[in-house]
Image (cartoon, rainbow, N blue to C red; front, side, top):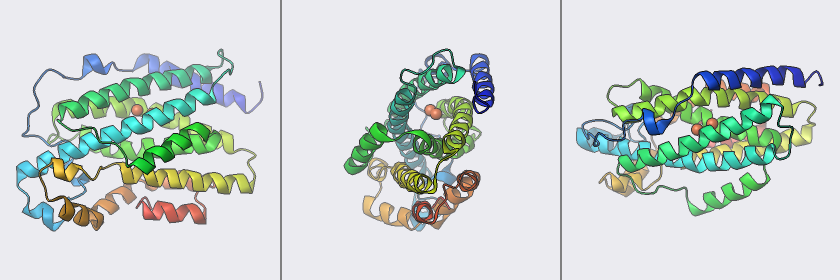
Amino acid sequence: MTEVDTPRKATTQRLLESAAMLSYDPALEVDWETPLDTSYHGMSPEWSTLYGTDYWAEMTEDQRKELTRQEAASVASTGIWFEMILQQMVLRDFYAKDPTDPAFQWALTEIADECRHSIMFARGAEKLRAPAYRPQRHVVELGRAFKAIATGEAAYAAILVAEEVLDVMQRDSMRDERVVPFVRTINNIHVVEESRHMKFAREETKQRLMGAGRARREANAIAVAITSYFIVTSMINREVYQYAGLDSERAIREAKANEHHRSMLRSSCAGLMDFLDSCGLLTKAALRFYRRASLI
Ligand SMILES: [Fe+2]
Ligand SMILES: [Fe+2]
């Protein structure tokens, strides 16, 4: 065992113990039976892409609730898309490695978590009466390439960004009494289990960067930033407005110009940006993409 491996073993051992103590089976924990109560929001309204716009002010309360329910379903669907990418990257990363290593067992535990999450998100979106929201075609294809080739710090930093962005939205919604109870349970399960994943992703990102030269750091910083840009901009599918019965063109226009939404994203990602900076992944070139995605 090398010096580097010892703390990693201890960390993953703790994660395994924590998972054994507190993990959920969404099939049993989430109330799938009660019919959808449309008097609730799907996410904290402050997270809606239209919150604070003129359009929002004109909408009825029912329209706002339908919109946040469609937006929550879209976030869940994008979550499924990224969890499939992530499961494949982690599985590839641990291919034929030492199964007695706690990190190996942790990696499989994380994949099992994500598998349950994706089923949970799929059922949740269905219950919210949403169609299949998928990222745009070119983003789906970029994801296909990324999940096939990304390794080391690029894979784990991208995983971290996706998990952190989802985490902040879900933390607000899980505590929010305006949000439909079954969605709050889904968010709660996800927040608890993802906190372990984020710890692992941070550790792996730092580990893999040890001894990385400048060129590799620069290249991976850009790869992570571009991936983050596509993840964040795919969170809310453009079709949500149409399914919420809104004027799609106007909604897209006002959502694009919504400074409130951008500031929500920025303030929630401050800790993440500090972490990337501390790893040397917030390079000049990377910053351009984080700014475009309103993460900084
Ligand atoms: Fe997850
Ligand atoms: Fe995760």
